[in-house]
Length: 151
Image 1 (cartoon, one colour):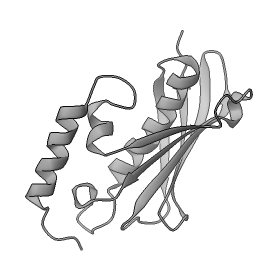
Image 2 (image 1 turned 30 degrees about the horizontal axis):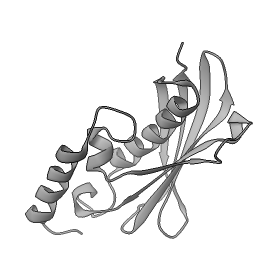
Image 3 (image 1 turned 45 degrees about the vertical axis):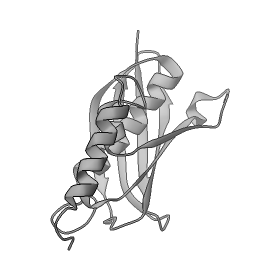
Image 4 (image 1 turned 90 degrees about the vertical axis):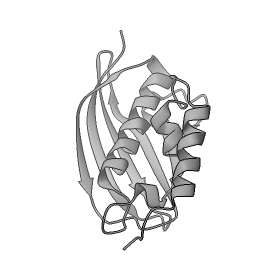
């Protein structure tokens, strides 16, 4: 189990998020607080079903549950963000209609990778998935979601 939170590290993380956030995709407060890094793959893909938003972030004491693992709410939030940012990148801001998360294994440390993608992209509704991997490359959580497309 994790010990007490380092107040200096927590204060620094909060200060950085407050100082660097903007109310825009990739830089909104929660993304800055979680220290999310974004990439969109592949660049310039002609087939939207192959497009992906990849997010990476470090597991820190600030993000752990009482058992010392990455909190499931943080995992779910990161997966939702990966899908939402992909929708925004390819079509403009959308909205999560529903999301189901399956937690498969705990993530205890290291860098997490989250990959959001379309399973079926429609004009008004899209079906998406997001996969969260621990630093060991093992699948730790899987989310499926329905998204309202912009327009």
